[in-house]
Length: 463
Image (cartoon, rainbow, N blue to C red; front, side, top):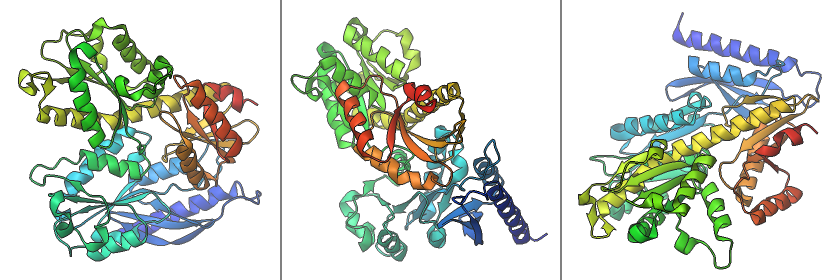
């Protein structure tokens, strides 16, 4: 059989299965309807375009994609669900032939760390397949610069369609001569083409796909008597890298409850950076900060001074060992600071993934106590089916939610609305200040999407 005929047959069978799934809910006037629109090519993958109500969706046709979409489109009772849109990454620009593979591998590795079968929904597009992108799905582009003309029309089209484009160049000082005119108003990034490190680019891609939160927060834990200068150095460096770095001497407002603010900020941090000087464990405060981070599942980067003793708890952290040459008096050398920032950046995605998994696991366990069945969706939310027939989409929020996160959740809910009656923003309030918890309760009274404390899942779903 011709390969195209094989793809076509698979597409038709997948479409027929979708239609049969819809038949289970045909007596519901709100049930979505599906209509075949055709087959498109997305990079190396072929996909069937299906119109579900007014929303176009892709049904990928590779084996891995078919397996993931089949699991997503079926629930325990056999009712049909909306086909998930893929996470789409466009790579273009004059640097694409030389560096696209390395960037793609970096993105695939980081996405694989997230779990939840997200990798099965990742699609890469290039300069020749720009038009295959599905506008309703998560979409981001990376422009690997080098001149002003290569793929200039494609870049301009993406900007005109309000697609986020991340320009990457070898020399940020020559940004205007390395990118087309449409990208010059966009804040660019610098990567050494001779030894490219795409870690920051990869994380920005995931942030724009909403697989990582956009806010970058970390917590610096140190002993003032031994590491004050190094802590201030690192705070400046992390701030320059786009982080909101918490430092106890300058981040706690006067008159606030010091310990309450510490735990609140630690809850909202992705990484705890421990400056493990020789006497770090002699302080009750530093020991409590590490213990609290472990209890909250916050990732720990342990920056170890050359003369520091072994710490039994160090096995629970990522170790970063310094050598005497990394110091200039009490200060860290610039290269050491740069390596520490890079190590935290690399750890960040894994830490968020682990906390996301813990939050989802606890929600599923609590929902089961209320008699609900749960299914984790590739779009990284959980669909809970209650005994009374209601379906709730629980969208996990790692860290401390804010009004912007509620807004993002309300924007995501229509995509899940084909098979959920309502959506909630799922979070862990343990460690949150009472004032902020009260603010979230107030938001619940005024916004269409409500928050749900994971510890209250059984009680709320059982009503």
